[in-house]
Amino acid sequence: MKRFFFSALVCLTACQVPSRVAMDGAGGRTAYNTAIQTTNGQQMLLNLVRLRYVDIPFFLDVSGVTTQFTYKTLASATVPIPGFSEDNPFLFGGELLWQDQPTISYAPLEGQAFSERLLRPIDLHTIQQLVYSGWEIDRIFRIMIQNFDELYNAPETSGPLPEHVPKYQLFNEAVDIFRYYQSRGELQLGIKFARHKTDDKEKDEDGKRETSLQLAIPDDGPKAHRLLELLPNAHRVGNRIGVSLDLGFNQSGRIGLMPRSILSCMYYLSQSVEVPDCHLECGVVKKTSGEEGECFDWCSVLSQLLTVHCSFMPPKNAYIAVKYRKYWYYIDDCDLTSKKTFVLLLQLYNLHAEERKTVGPILTLPIG
Image (cartoon, rainbow, N blue to C red; front, top):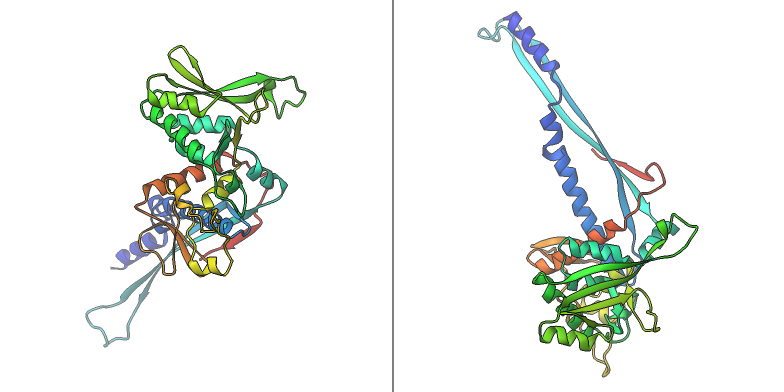
């Protein structure tokens, strides 16, 4: 009996933390991965709501997650007073303690470098990458392009407080044609480069600079012919129609392609945030008025991209939700269109992310 007790005591006190327990479960890698992914989405949605209220957006980055696992065991034996327990000569007891103590480090993203990153126009290579990766070209253009060839895509929404009814119908018609041929696998898209002599190799490797975005579709019907009417710069090349959208202004001084910045994309999509009537009435949120003074409905512009609902009570079927100014703002989990646009915005934000040059967290929170 004594030999059995001694073996059990050694076995318990010598236990180590199993690798499967440390990696899985509530304190494992998947749990932290899910939590960080969810909070990244909540942060982006919160900033969209802030921009709708003309408040200042703010980003807080998770710079590091560390955790410490503690696994303790204790075994003991007690001998009762003779006569109280005749069947058991001694009592055997044990205690098991498991602790997970994570430490999460946050770093506020601010300063000149981060501000320039938010305000820098999206480069054509990013647009090309997204199209090649399978994203719909109409969704990309509506979010990231302000206008091309004098077709306007609600340029008023690239900043706060849009006061005028936007122009967007002809722009949407053109990108719908591009999407039609993309869905058939007949859209070709490329970037034209030009070489310029420069001494700044960090900004201009090998003297190459993006100058225009080029698209081509088959010349095979009324949709292609309509594109020729919409875009004066479009031209026939054999049995195809080519469009060359110069970055900025073309050689004739006409408007070419004007990409938005990440912040402008966020301002644009923030108009999809529904707000309570009481906030409109008291002037907390600016409303866009039509020619006759009526309130312009932004759903006509953004309903095919994103819809952020508003509720006083916590939503029951939310894909992502945040609370702001005593109301809940959320994307419905069944709204696949809005979810795709929101994922695209997060992906665009990550594509323009830059590694921080500062070392060490600014704010560290121990949890547990």
